[in-house]
Structures are given as C-alpha cells and as structure tokens.
Image 1 (tube, rainbow over the protein chains, first blue to last red):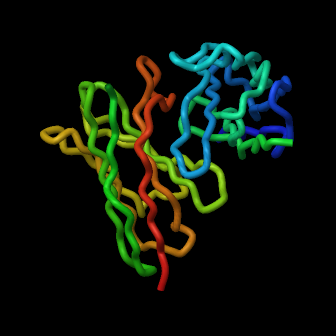
Image 2 (cartoon, rainbow over the protein chains, first blue to last red):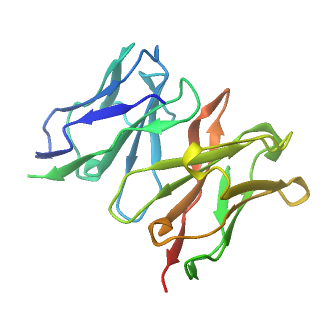
Length: 107
Length: 120
C-alpha cells in the first residue's frame, strides 16, 4: 500500500495568512493526488484533484502543486471558513490511502 | 444535482452486523463507482472499499476482507455496505462517496454520513 504522510499535523494561523500544507507519498504517484477539507460534523469536500486542478466552485485562494512523491496545498489568504481539517489522498492505485490530516486552527 | 442520502444512525452490540444504505440521485447510478469510507471518533479517514454499480464488482480493504460486503440495487439506485462481527473499534461515521467524472479513485461527492455505535 502507498503511505501518505502530511505535515504539519496541526497548524495555527490568522485570517489573511498564507499557509502551506505538505503531503508526501511513499512511492511515486505522478499527479494522482487529491486534497479535501472537512469541517466538524460534516463530510469531506473535494478541493483539488490531479495535484493542482481546482474543483468547480472552490475559491481561487486554494492551490495545489507537486508531482511524484511531494505535494503542497497552499491557501493564499486564509478566510474564517477555511479553518478545518485537510486531508490528502492518493488516487494512483488501490487501495486508496489518505494522509493522517492537518488541523488548521485559528490563532 | 448529485445527492447521496444515507440511512440513519445505528447502535449495535459486539458480534452483531450492521447494514448502511446510500441512495443516489441526480446522475446515472451505474456510471460511477461508489466508495465507502469510515472515520472513527476524532480520527482520520479510512477507505473501506468500492463497488462498481454497473457490474457489481467490488474491491475491499484487506483489513476488512471477510467482514465487509458491498452490494447494490440498480432498480432503486441504492448501494449498501454490510459489516459483520462488529467490534468496539468499528464505532465510526460511515460515508458513501461517488467517484469523480473520469476518475474512479477520486471521491467527488459524499453522503452525509451514518454513525454506527458498537457498544455492549
């Protein structure tokens, strides 16, 4: 199975900050990388697919990058609704695997 | 619009079975894989498996092999996930999720979740 490792596990930031979350795969997954965010009590929501393509309706302050084993999710200017937990997921091969999550909290 | 509506919360005793359903609407049910993902309290996301509603083919997480069964009823656009021999650490919110267009392992739409509590 492909292991996905996110860092940091948690992050405190303020509205307006620029933040970056990283995700590393245990083997090359090309650009088969998905980012989700999840708010408490809600289902995850797809933000970015193919490592860098924005899902429809997702604000342009979100961006993704990387290929192979190292990936990033950047939020250019944090908004109050962005405080949530973020997960990466590889869609390269079965079984699907997720990172452990990054909890983004208000400073 | 795509909607996945799951069945309600369940409380089960250890050793029992639970069946969670996921009713799809707003798209061609047989055109997209349906996945099941669970999340234990305060924990991350764990993929459980998928079903191809067109063929009925399934692929389960190795950890759950022998305990999980995924089925579908195309006449009512509903997928089901049954988990047997429940243990306390099966307590979780269970989600169904539809694959994104053209990407069977990418989860574009999610149900609202079903809480399954396993307790004696």
